[in-house]
Image (cartoon, rainbow, N blue to C red; front, side, top):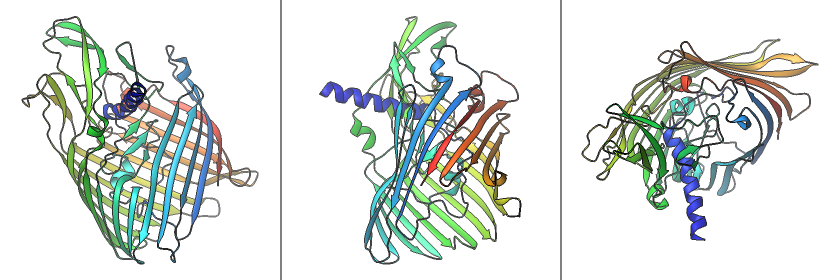
Length: 475
């Protein structure tokens, strides 16, 4: 039994480790965010669900992984929110599960919580819950505040923090306090160890380098995971405070958050190999946790059919030195600025058209490795915390076309990164032949102006252009 438990822990750590290796901040066109609020609750009991089946065909084939060139995926998402003014308690949950045709399964708990209502303005929550910590963080999927679940880097899903929350809410003022003894990091695709290499049944996994040039001598690298005690990873407390002033429905508003909590991406430490004389060197890699202080502020204006928002976020990671003989990742602080605008359009031809324009600029955020004395190491597995540092994003969605008098929902998202000199285009059409059923087709296209060996996000995944089709049932 202990061996089985250890293997289960090991598999879970590989999943967590992948997100530490390659955290995602990419954008998916179906995630259309209202800039005035990202986590509104309904005033009545509410049950919702989505069943989705899709077949996906990647344009560029991988001869060594034929099962990843064409994939079928079935997923379900179920949620419930209970809220009645006359009741003092309730609960909510938002769960996801999916399975690929080649056998890989995945599960996600975005929210699961209970609450007790002290009066009309005060609520106490316990569990995993989303709150409006930072619109910048939610819009760009940077996961500074709330962690992401990303088995597909073009479809990251934001998840709530886990802990105890105390909320006071008035129409023109609100605050939330948060504390937790438990840390749940970013989660990603399943990774396993085979013959000294890290492998995965996913096109979104990139293996760390298996070669290293040490003083003109090329060394081959193999990898193993040094499994820590699970409690040493998850038993990490944190706390945060959010304060908002102004109406979310109209006029000016401001939302500020401050916290001290674990960084959602696990950092990596490894045994140093620079002194090794062997041609084949085994690198022992172990996930670890570091903290950061974080501050964010959103300032916005909501008018009739339009919204404007300016956001700022900064963090200061805590430096951590490893034990003798190991090196560890050191995260440089970031300062993130963002501008966003949203405009609604309505006409006899175009129904409920929403457009958004956003810009993000990031300063800092690089990664390097240090030894036990704090000296910079000559090798690092990954060198950036984020995937986009200087990018503009344009989105629109609406019922622009119709077929047999049935509307077609069109979703388009275009991102241009000026530092990477590359683009990401997401498109999707949803046709509703009958109520609650949608037939969908779409495509995701990644391009760079010049292809090279850069480790930047768009260049790394430029071979993952794809088209897909499927059906949705929503209830």
